[in-house]
Image (cartoon, rainbow, N blue to C red; front, side):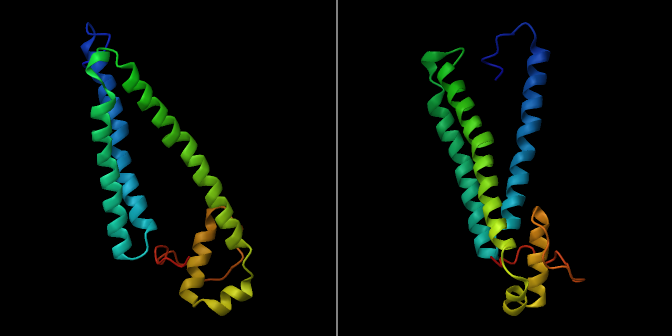
Length: 156
């Protein structure tokens, strides 16, 4: 970022911009790793999920070295354009698709009759179903044992 800056006479401002960029990027990897770890049931799935996430995130370095072409220096329009397009796809479009997908899943879960849940699952699993439904679907299981300790057991 410092190399492609057009404001070489303002190194302090440029370095502060680099600092803000990195301050926003580094916490993201920790949050995504925790999110994957909490949403994978079982230690094997969790290990594979975190490993796959780390592998795909490292592919960014390979892609980055091929989209910033030396012939386009110092502005690199192709590299920055590709980065901006990927930011729009991965940061705006994909979360919206994911949100609507989850909304459909939660709607199906909410449609399960209470009697079926009580007949099919143990009390611990019933409390898990209750805990999952706090994400925006009205609770159909209203009992006193709403423990969130088994959120990652993989009921569904």
